[in-house]
Image (tube, rainbow, N blue to C red):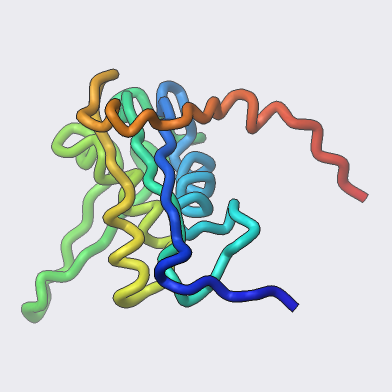
Length: 152
């Protein structure tokens, strides 16, 4: 039986991911696991024991297939007939970080815990970010994807 962590036992570290030529969904799964803390052996479902993730070069992220033009994001204004839709192409032109943020948000739990965990995601255009003093560990997505996965 595993032991659950207490609030004072939680320690967070920082990770840096370069989103250059990364696919949105695959990048979002890696980020959501780190933010939730599922990559740690001390994972506790009801606690926020995840790590911080800094994503850079978000303007060079990509979608597979025709999703960049055909996928739709919906939101509602709260007024009758107030449903709004947009595509990743329009979203990328206005706010390049929003598509990745939405993908990660939908992989996190709903409610207060998910909102708190989403604040650990920091997304930036370009190579520079203000968190270099935290000495983030660099995660190379190419090495994660090239692992040989044996399926039965």
